[in-house]
Image 1 (cartoon, protein in one colour):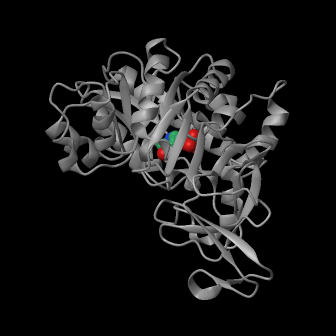
Image 2: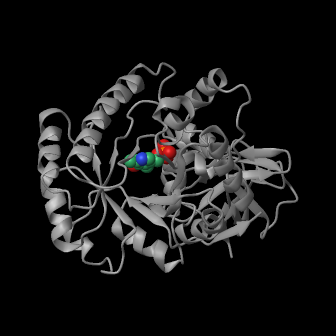
Image 3: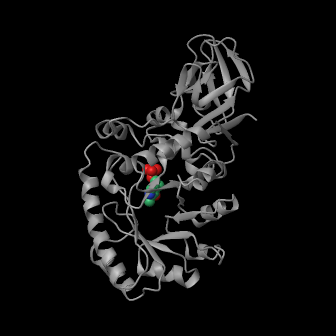
Length: 383
Ligand SMILES: *Cc1c(COP(=O)(O)O)cnc(C)c1O
């Protein structure tokens, strides 16, 4: 095996317990959309099942119906929140016996479409400032009107999503959204109660960063994605957290990305390396070839910039990232030989490379770096 990911069970468990401690009154939902943020849906399900069994994880959240069905095929039996707007025809893929998929819907048409195919429980989405799914104002009131005369519908929840908590230190926008959501909750609860719906309306709004930084955003459920995998949502979230917590929670990334040197090439000074000849060796250079490229999810904008770790030392990428390979400079690691482990993300001895470091170099966020790792690469659970 030339390339693989290691997923730490202990790191995931630590992340869940951090949230259990900071938000003991809210049910923890792990967000495992997009192949569990690249960590592998099947492997993450294996890690989360025991946490679900002991009650620290109350449910899982995904984007699409096919992901929810995959969770069932991996033996997960609990509640699944399906957060994206799926195609109506996708509902037909859900077995008629399924009753614990909760769909997120926004409009009267959404509700009609789902109920005509599968009478699954649904959560109504309110737009409080993200301008994505959900409705607000008069259009939202119209949906409540529609529901008020149909108490037999399996309406179970109300939710929203924050647009601007992880990107800033000032939570003004988040607080404005929270105020709008509080209004929407008041309205929806009143309709729910007076129209004959039974039980309690489940309310939820917080993703990783709001759950940490805005305690009022922790309602019945919290929906934790990026931090489930041991990441801070951003550096400003980490800075803001210092002002919120007496004792900072510790997160450690669950994922390490490893590969192996497959070839060594010793070249003279003045030799061009890679497509476009964007690097020319200033001196005799030893090049190691690693079988990972942009197809595997190693961003092409890391060309000539990022490093990998070999034998505990940094080796810089030389030239452009290819589709399935990169070339790195191992001139200062003379013992390097084919078969050596190359760490693209993770620890090697005293050195480490984080997804955040690659995200900074690539001009993106840690979320994108990990979700883009090719799903076919083996994921191995370690401890
Ligand atoms: C992806 C997503 C989340 C999780 O967000 P993180 O920032 O990764 O914790 C929560 N809620 C919704 C609606 C999402 O789409």
